[in-house]
Picture 1: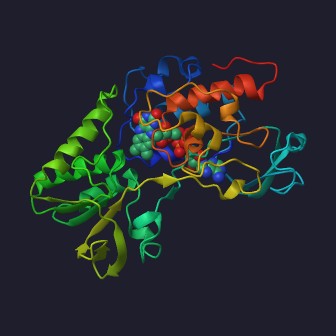
Picture 2: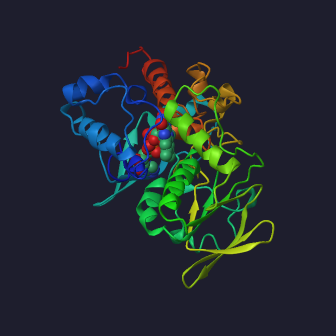
Picture 3: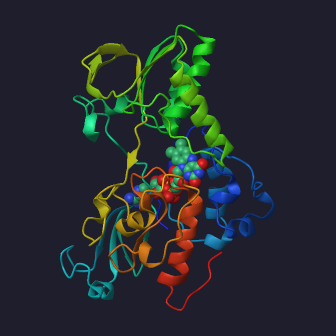
Length: 365
Ligand SMILES: Cc1cc2nc3c(=O)[nH]c(=O)nc-3n(C[C@H](O)[C@H](O)[C@H](O)COP(=O)(O)OP(=O)(O)OC[C@H]3O[C@@H](n4cnc5c(N)ncnc54)[C@H](O)[C@@H]3O)c2cc1C
């Protein structure tokens, strides 16, 4: 298990955001056996960093995984020994050669060989761009370091927002979470001003699953939609709007919107989603979904599921990637799709480990 950063790095970037799903849905049964009485209760809603501190880091450090978890090992390339992407693409012959990985570590580059590779590298490292059609807005790339792109950075910057002008972009659950936090701030400091720009034309732009069995998700989506539908004085909601241009000003950022309006902001909070990093698997003959950059067969099997809690069962074949022995697992298998839930990812992993990876069939707990 190679992790580019510290164990649980992606979850550490959630700030104080809590899981919508209770802990019992987010971990395999074996975790309770490993942690014993240290395991928090199944019904608790942990924040991302709490999940790391109380669950993932202790499991990674447990005797059960001694020597298995290598932190600060970033995979920079995965290929098939001596074969280019086009050599026998889609043919089982490729399965006769081992995988070779080039890995960046603190002591230099290392090579690893593997018979099976599970790519669980998530989809939270690369943000989707702000501009119309997913293209970078003019000036966006140059200002990337000044934009708030995840809830962890948002939580860090929030104390500096009272009385400021903030642009919030996006209408997913992260943007909804940020809108509620900004409303709390504006209640304490009424001079705070927020423009919330969304691509959607809906009066209630955040997707609500009805009836939503996850109460925390229901609360966030419906409270943010209440704000958008009937905005208080601090909030101006701009629908069917995207960002055309960003320009650095001495004390902030000037933004030009798709309608031609321009405004100056002290901060731009761009929570427009993430896309998977496929750069390090580009020498593999993979079937990638044209719609979401996740695993193509899985994407076809799931069709247009919009409720992450009612997903159809998928077969071992649906979880194959086109490259024998290589599997996308976890959030990366859904690519840009926003409906991934750990519970589904764990079920997929169980299928892969028990039926696909082990030809004799082992059980996974
Ligand atoms: C704010 C927020 C709230 C969410 N709430 C829920 C929820 O309530 N329930 C739920 O089920 N899901 C939720 N999700 C979805 C959630 O992201 C996933 O369920 C979960 O984090 C996916 O786990 P993962 O291990 O697949 O990927 P990640 O958690 O993204 O982990 C991927 C890991 O791979 C590492 N990595 C990346 N590239 C490389 C590389 N080249 N080499 C080595 N390592 C690499 C990263 O550093 C990272 O630690 C939420 C997501 C967000 C952003």
